[in-house]
Length: 522
Image (cartoon, rainbow, N blue to C red):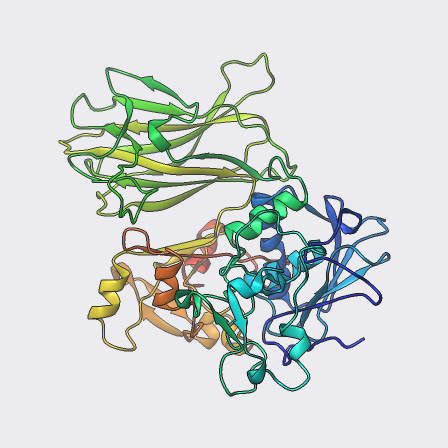
């Protein structure tokens, strides 16, 4: 059997077992039983392990497919660092079915691609209706590779579950896949998708839809709640007021915002809705509460992430407090409240993405409390697009507003630094490349240099490194990643090694605080 290497095709390939006649989406006998058992081989790069764990969460949020470390199951995925990025299609081998995440394969989109193969999917351009949407240019293919790309299933062999051809599928090859250098090998019938095919950012909405159809998913593992206040609906949330203050579903607010977040950018005349609590009138301390229904937990990890967008047009002393109320049992109607997060300070000019990490261990409500502070206000707090899932929140979120204008008005080579970030242990850092291997990642007081930061604070940092390419402005526009002109970058750091305390000796609380201050790095 010939396994395509990473150099044969830049990002991915699949392996078909001998003597198998499979459709583009495998039949039920080759489907996995959720949770899918897996083993992470010790030879995997540390970054690859972290990406794989993050991808598992993506599947949990978007489907009913869960994953678990193998105990004694006969069928399981043996995820290893072999030659290239590849997977068998469907569940075909007992006693460990190999899936390779080789050198250069450890990105979210590529790992999602290979796991979709393992779960039963072939490439998008192998659909029986492929020729209605793309043209394969055989003359531009590498010799001997014609059957790899110019290959499709008949309608008798495959099913597409009634979905449209998906140019942005993470399972679609790029325009220059397997090219001999004489030009593109795939030409889209609709030219506006020519530079879109082959994206490896993440699975598309249609990818997720087909996965759920294939596995007959009626709900997801980790996704709990969404509310975009569509058509003015309250999503079964309850309002509680004090002294007349209340959350109200609106289409715009005099002090801002002028539109909801869900429909940005919105070229239609139809207005969207969001929820707003005014702090214009009333007394200091007046509050309005918005409460979700009871959220029941599916997973045992006791980790939840609340994500929402907010717009602050009130006074800098106004507060948006995020509470949870946990209930011991069904007879407990009062619950135990806990404050989980707070937003205050200067008003905003854009919708802002915000995350709150929760750690509920029992059924709970989420409560949004808008509280009026001292001083006058011309607006209040607005909230839209609320998401709740049983996953970890992103570790770093950087929102760059008016990105296109910033690119147009900045000289080439201009650097935009993230705000200083803090780990849960109190160490400061800025975003940097996770794959750089050198002594530059040593203690910054030994390998870095001192810099006077805010308030004449002396901090030490190593040399700055960066990923030279995230995406193009065309891709940001095509995928509508720019909402209201803002681009949002989220970063996650997954540690799959045991923590040790031998490198750091804490002598006193004062020494601890000083050590944390000086362990800043770029």
